[in-house]
Image (cartoon, rainbow, N blue to C red):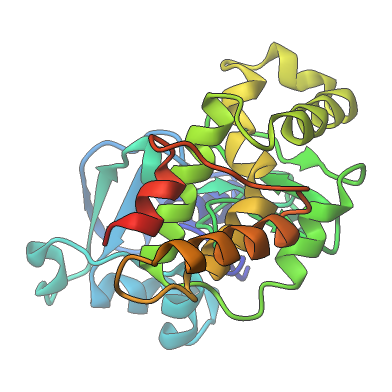
Length: 279
C-alpha cells in the first residue's frame, strides 16, 4: 500500500493498519516499533519515526525507504527520535494551523488496497493553504471539516492551481494571505465575488451548513485562493524599498487588472497600502 503524495505519517499508518483490520498501535507493535505518546485523529496527531522505524515500515510495505520518506514529507522529528538507533516512534499533537487537510476521496480510493479510510495530506509547499485536486474537482482548506468539497461549480479554483507554475516567495505569500484574510473578514474590495463563491460552495455541498464550524470560516482559504495567489505573485515584483507615489499608482492599476477589478484604492489602514509604503 503506497501513501498519497505529502500524506502525513499518522494518516498513512492509520490507513495501513485499517487495511489489515488493526489499530495503529497494534501495527507498530507487530513491526517491533516502540511507540510513545497518545494517538488521536490522524489529522490532529503527527507521527515521528526514527530511521530504523522507517526502514521497518518500508520493508513491510515493500517501498524503498527513500521513496517512503519523500512521500510522507516527514517533519523534523525531536532530537531523541532523530538520533535513535532503535525502532522508535512518537505521537505528537498538532496545532490546527499545521494540521494536514483531507485528501481527495477519489485519489484515495484509487490506491490499492481500495479501502475507504480517509487520508490526510499536507498542502503543497509555497502555495496558499489548501488541497485542490484538479483531476477530480475536490478541494479542502480547513481540517475542521473532514470531507473534501465538490468544486465543479468553481472552475477558477482548479485554474488557479493549474497555472501556479512558479510558487511565490514565502514572504510575499505571507503578506498576501494576511491581506486577503483581512479583506475577507472586513468585506473589502472582493466581497461580492467571495460571497458568490461561498454561496456556490454551500449549494454544491449542503453538508457544509451542518459541520462543526461556520462555512464562512471553514472555506475562507479556499474562497480566497485564486486572489491570494495572484496577489502573492504580484507582490514578488515589488522592490525592497517603499514605492514612490507614481509607482504606487501604477502598481495598484496593474494589480486591479490582475484581480479583474475596475480599480483598487486601498485606505491608509489597508495592509496592502502598508506593504507599498513600508518595508
